Picture: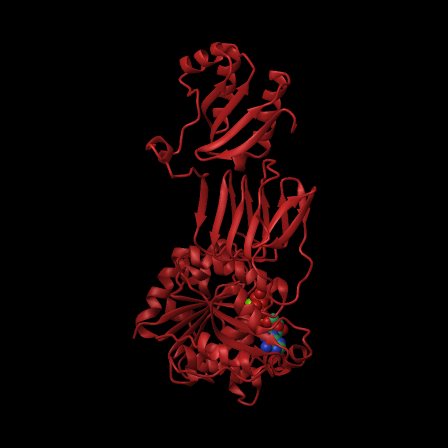
Length: 267
Length: 224
Ligand SMILES: Nc1ncnc2c1ncn2[C@@H]1O[C@H](COP(=O)(O)OP(=O)(O)OP(=O)(O)O)[C@@H](O)[C@H]1O
Ligand SMILES: [Mg+2]
């Protein structure tokens, strides 16, 4: 085994990075993969909360980096999903407690025994973001269908290219089907057209996301929601399966284009 | 300021043509503009056409030193005065403009034509990217919202121009901006600003230039 390291990042805050990290981790593990999720948002940790593992934290990423524990000891095993682990962020330290080369070292240690390492990046383009992308083999940039989020995604994609981690792949989160149909939302097509990178997922706005976040149960576990299904589709695409994009809009021509243009795969 | 001198991009740098006014005023105005537009001038090669001015060794020498403090090289001084020419030569400066290579090799029927210095960038400029160059700038790719180009000369985008551009940034009103899809956030030529009104559909390739003191965009086939 040699894990692939995927960093989930965005530029703009609050677009869904943590939600997506937790759900991709859960979905991949439930398909039999060995997965470690790392919360790189030091000082504002919340991946543990979304995954419902907060109460089991003993050691965190900074403890590993500063040698207070072995890597194994900081890996919290998710009891609901076989093969899923979390390395939480420290709550009380700032981002300078970890360096990009620390992240590379931690991931290199995880690679041999896992299939995927998924890193939840903090928003912005500061140190925490640099830490998060340093070990990445691939970067997924998350955006919402909103001008400012797309603008920041563009900036991030440029930096990812400059760091030679590119080309990044795109996840558009919180598409509101009704608003798209009314023409009140920037369309998926316009976003892909501007950002000019491969699309790996479109996730609808879904109130179940908030309910499951509050419960600490990743939505992909409960099966029935549209957002959960969309995130499961992303993980199947990560495994190399060709999965059509969900029919979220009424424009047939646009979907056809996505099939051919965005059927990105990870080998 | 504009009356003191004129700046023009030439094939190997910038040509500054000094007006008839007082030398000290020119010197002051030039140095002020250079420090205000540091990015624009950095690394440039400058030639100065002093016209009728007849200069003393101290005047020319100190101007050269001041200019080089800004990281800019004074390459040539062109003058109508024999004394100034001689002086420039003793200071190790050229006294005429370098000719483009094609012109130098001139045959009996020279069919080659000279050109200007330009920077070619073959990639898309994303939000946060910025280019500033004394000559012309040519982009093969898109210029996204949040990206910025400042050029002393023209700006040519073989792609969609949606960011912010400033052509003729050192005052050249003849500069143009063209793009396959000309829908910039903001477009400036020299001192004139234009903001694209929201458009429906994909516009054809267009050229923007100053006509009667206003920035006008027109189809490329009409711009002659
Ligand atoms: N598809 C969705 N439908 C509805 N709500 C969503 C969806 N995706 C995310 N949310 C909600 O948006 C909020 C922000 O999500 P999340 O914390 O995952 O974003 P983030 O990018 O990690 O934020 P930060 O930049 O602060 O780390 C949460 O309340 C989450 O429940
Ligand atoms: Mg987060």
